[in-house]
Each structure stands twice: as structure tokens, then as C-alpha cells.
Length: 236
Ligand SMILES: [Ca+2]
Image (tube, rainbow, N blue to C red; front, side):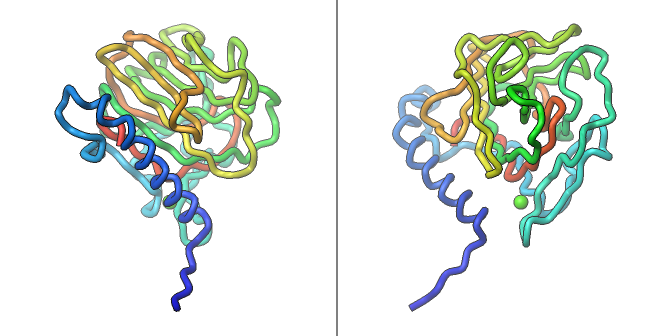
């Protein structure tokens, strides 16, 4: 008889990918039929498990971020509010993936909040389609939906605008890790956001203003921890 000892986060992530593989297997056939491939052949365009620090990223304020260890596992912590004032009202804390330019993609991120402030606006954000510091998209995952929270936003040379056509009433943060996914189709303009449940999006938008760019992780003005960032060319 063998006794297996697996770190808790590793187990959570393993379980997640097993569930994803199972869920995607049931929908991948129809989604990728035109391409003549099934979901299992999705190609990884970018990944980071933070086992080797944070060299793959560039920051709006590098002092707010730190590559840390949770036991043996490397993670990227957004440990403080960034000292960065955007030219137009938009998130302060952004880590952009270096040397990445993606059009259609699927991005998965493990993330947790370490904050308790902000009320309905306590958030973690994911970013994509960056043209420059005042032109990009971001997904704001927050406790309560309103004009400035828990939506998909465009920053287009002026203060951010919510562009979600459908969204839930809010996203309940707790102290544990969650998995967020963006599905971006640059041809149709569709943007879908998933949170833990990969079968039903929590937000949906359609926009073709910015068709490619790097991805990013961060927060409007809160703190948190990120791990296992993966960007595929299609649903895995
Ligand atoms: Ca890690």
C-alpha cells in the first residue's frame, strides 16, 4: 500500500484540469469541427507557474508585486496598491505578459484575493488587447455588478466603459483560490468570462475595437495572488 502526499493547491489544480478536460471533451467536438481538430490539440501560446520568478512580466509599478513561495509553490503576489496613476480612469495594478501578441485565445488563471476592502468593488482583474497604456480591454471580477464593477471594460483613450451585454449580479470572493477564464474570438468579437464553472459564462461581450495584444493580470486597486497562467490558441 502506498500513501500519496500531495500539496493542497496542487491537488486543487489537478482536480480543476481533470474537470476541464472532461467538460471540454463534451463541447470541443462541435466548437472545433471547422478546424478539423479536437480540443485536446490546443496549443499553449504562453504559460507561467511562477516557479522561476516573474521575469515574463512587465508592471505598471514593479514595487507592488513580488514572486513568492507558498510552501514549495511559486506564485505572483500583488502585495500592495500600485503607485501608478493612469492617464484615464482605469486599473492601477497591471502585470503585462512580455513579448506576447495574441488575437483569438483562451486564458486561464488561478487567483485569489488577499484584500478585505472595497465592498462591492473588491476586485481582481484580467487584461488583454493592449495597444498602449490608454487602449486595452479588461475583465473586472468583483463582488457586486454596477457601472464600474464586475464587468468587461474597454479603455479607449477615456475613462473605462462597461461593455458586457450579459453578466451575473456579482462574483463572491472568499479567501481561497479560484480559476478564471477568458475566451476571446477576434473574428466574431465575442468575449466570454468564466469563473470556476467552465460551463456557463459569468460575463459576455462583443467588441472588435482591439483585435490583438498581450494579456495581463492585476487589480483595479486591491491585492491578491496569481498562479498557473496559461494562454491557449483555443479551448483546451
Ligand atoms: Ca506556481
